Length: 389
Ligand SMILES: *Cc1c(COP(=O)(O)O)cnc(C)c1O
Image 1 (cartoon, rainbow, N blue to C red):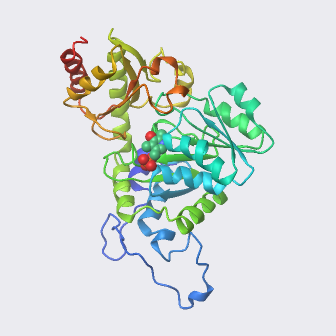
Image 2: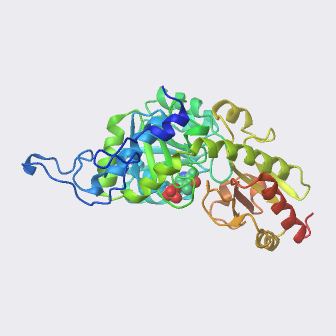
Image 3: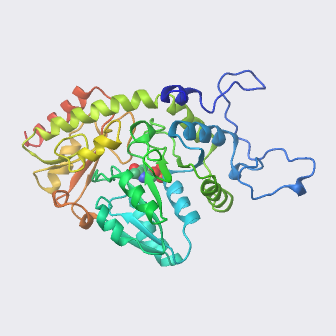
């Protein structure tokens, strides 16, 4: 196999046959030429090139690149990470099926499985701490179809043992899906740890520039990906735009370089925060103080650049601290070049699910690619401005 960096640059690309351009063009056409006798065609075939909602050229190049760099045989790229998550649940789950999902997940998963799929489609769901393998074993029922989790989980950075979950799932004929968005295939490779399905929001580290949305589902099971393609694109219309697919393809060329620096900057900021008396806690899987550190060390190549931390202060001082930041931007999302921070207050709807140290409100931070001295210096000056240092 070629190395990861080589695949990030070459997989899915070849010189354009018409012009000789060495980068493939952006194909914005909605429709593709039909064969001599179109009545022979299967119009809902998600692999036939007919109409861009069923899959277009740039999407297919990106699918090839994502599959190769993730070690998967099959991939479907969709309009967003949430389209990939909802598409997976929609394609795999039938009325009467049971799903176990982590109590720490991206908010859309919480809404889909805690409110929508159960109430609309009669799917049974159990929300639980999926880092407790014995409890997961006990929660499996004869109708359990899927276990879904994230590791590290958004936003508490909880670590699940992916290999152990895969073993429990497979002993019981259950599928395991992992949202790998915080890691990208550079830092963690869930298919190699035994997961059946991997979901990535390509909006984050994979594109890396904060300027295009996309999501994908990866698997070594051709039937699963084909089903998601047919339902999510042909019938639900969650297709990625050719322009976004092209931008993400371009972003991936520097994914390994960016992740290397994210890992270094993430660790530097986490260590700095942990050294401050005004910081109540730091959740970063690279710190030895993190509950999941040993498992993280086993299953991740690097610890990434997502962390959460608390300040020993009141609600409004959190907002004041953010207003003094000059390098770090107050905005949602993650995995951009720019460092981003969000204050999640004590009245957040999911706070009841999080460990006690999070309950006074906390920051989730995506450590960017600026000089780490500048990121740390920015936190330092803002803490001084509000009198915490
Ligand atoms: C952002 C995010 C998503 C959703 O991705 P979008 O591209 O914004 O739809 C899913 N999972 C995790 C862990 C995320 O951080």
